[in-house]
Image 1 (cartoon, one colour):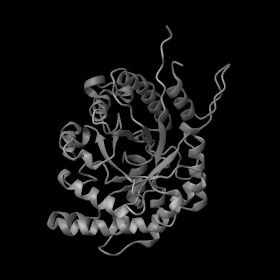
Image 2 (spheres, rainbow, N blue to C red; image 1 turned 135 degrees about the vertical axis):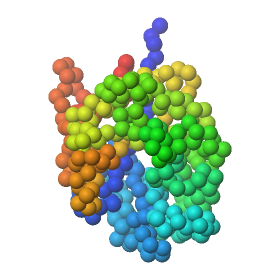
Image 3 (cartoon, one colour; image 1 turned 90 degrees about the horizontal axis):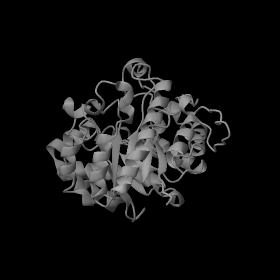
Image 4 (cartoon, rainbow, N blue to C red; image 1 turned 90 degrees about the vertical axis):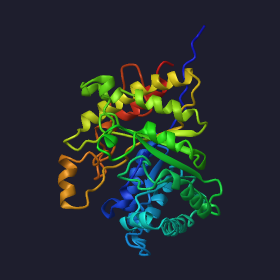
Length: 369
């Protein structure tokens, strides 16, 4: 009897923050970037409409930034991508202070902010947003100051504001599967947060889980101090997938990636990261499926292009220290990193995608067939 192999029908997407930076948001550059992503099998982009950038001061809306976000969406359409997912993230400091002082005024301010976002999306109903993520990494204090019990109200406001634009809008909640932020009291362990979140989960439609083995998750228990083997240690991710899949929701691997900034990593290590990660991910998914668990519907790369540090200090730490820079598949100048450079076909074989990432994903999707 022939064994049936798991057929993986996963969508691949990528985070992109190019529209946050004037130097990276030219229409020609963005269209080339998004066209190149499409050639690599990326179907859509997720990107932030940062509250702190849109409304740095109460009532003072940055129309230039809003126009850049809209223009990025236009270029995705021209490049042939599917409609993006937008992330309503990063409340400005004044809004965080308002939340702590007067929640009702905070909710009113949030509503005004997303009404501005909707205005800039309403210019194109033929390329309609279908998914909105509420805030970013709900269990990470660095990005989210909002308590779990207040998230349902944010969801209700968002659905109401976007109802006429798209009554079938899907709301996503993202969480970090990590152990460093709790260790430094910068967040809540995913296990603990899931217990809180389960009480309010029905306010959302999609669960997005971010996982960075070797960076924000150190699998010391699983692999000891053998750093090279950390990239393929997915035990914690499998544990969380198993819990979330039991809720009956669509869920996704919302962010996965590795930096090439010189201190934390380089382009060769980024290639090894993706090789190890995807080689370990397939048997993990097979095990979930064999045990009756629902599989994720999407995998999102963090991120499409390197970001541009915004000050001299950022330029220094971006190249030498900070792990948050240089996750891109592309460099900020548009050049392909090693992960996207072409490789020769193996003897006797012919691949559709010739980049290293393309070969990794082909092997991931078809292994065993």
